Length: 450
Ligand code: SAH
Ligand code: SF4
Ligand code: F3S
Image (cartoon, rainbow, N blue to C red; front, side, top):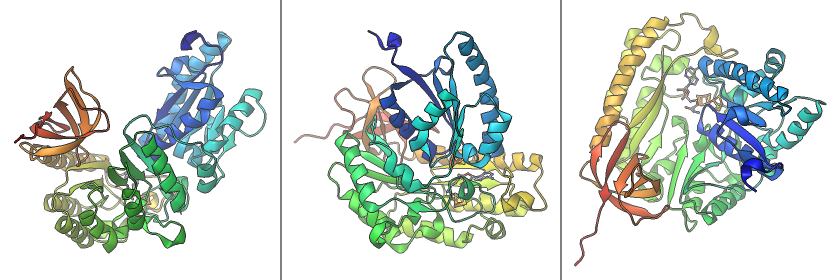
């Protein structure tokens, strides 16, 4: 019998918004539901269960949820008329922040589940089917969730591993401390055993995840650098990355490790947000521009080829033209291999939202355009600087055409290269001969034989 016609098979559609934490969580939700007979479908109109894993970080992201629910309602009504039904679940940070409001505003939504309650999904779905009990689950701890979720089933040679959740930093613009709660680190032993199980299933590159991943403090006082060293000691772990980190948590030990541990990839996402000291202070970032520049200089000293990535917000309340110029200067001084930049979006309940002197939309757009033009130029020239180099590339899959493979460079670049022999998970030498803004390409480098 084909999967399509198996009566016990239910179809699950998950739409993921926001950051890598949500990408990771969506995988975990899929894993928790698969023993109940749910299999992933790519079509929301055809799904028995739809989960929107939402993001609250900017207003646009939040509004998307309500418009998507509107679209789903039409599918749901059609399916109900056909006698099939559809369960609609809202997960993620909007669920946590606005759960009650969703229940009020969107009757088509059957259940709302916050980021610490995904292990409760089977129970919530059963309740929704019986139309009894609470439709909202948002009050759990991160530890409960991690303990209750099943073992992972990774589907490639790269994987995320969540080691830390939540944030106590309270940047004045940000909702994360409210949606993800206080900083929580998973016990060291749990992280190590999850890494081992990923490797046993073919994973070669692990990206450690957390809102403030370098604030990690495991049981027994082990810090983040210590955790990285322990992970690097696992046979089969070939590459390690981490995100997102906070500049104030880049301690000496971690910076030194970038020069000592070859499995730690020479790429770092380190958000700076602004180049202006006054704005950084108003943002409550807890450091100034000189502090950030110093970290970068020290990283480059121990690992000269390290590539940097960052986040910027333009138009934070009160930002003047001159303060924006300080951000442009920061970009010119540091030079980034890639970056994300956003217009400031006032978020309900955060201190910055009630600050005076919100910046006009027009000025924000103009600043964002200028900043992005500079960042894109740096990204392209970073990619072009790889031309002529031979890079170790982790093979992740087939390329766009026959005879081509796809992989990942140490600097997190997407690489297409000519080769027929390599298997997924191999690390092969590729000579780079072409670059665009978003990727690089070349051919397998044949070692000269004596
Ligand atoms: N924990 C990380 C990132 C959190 S959110 C850190 O500390 O940097 C990801 C990015 O979204 C932030 O780095 C910031 O650039 C952006 N962001 C967060 N809140 C925002 C807001 N209110 N408006 C615009 N951008 C925002
Ligand atoms: Fe938000 Fe700041 Fe925490 Fe990052 S460090 S998650 S920007 S409050
Ligand atoms: Fe968005 Fe929540 Fe991540 S608000 S950026 S999904 S932590």
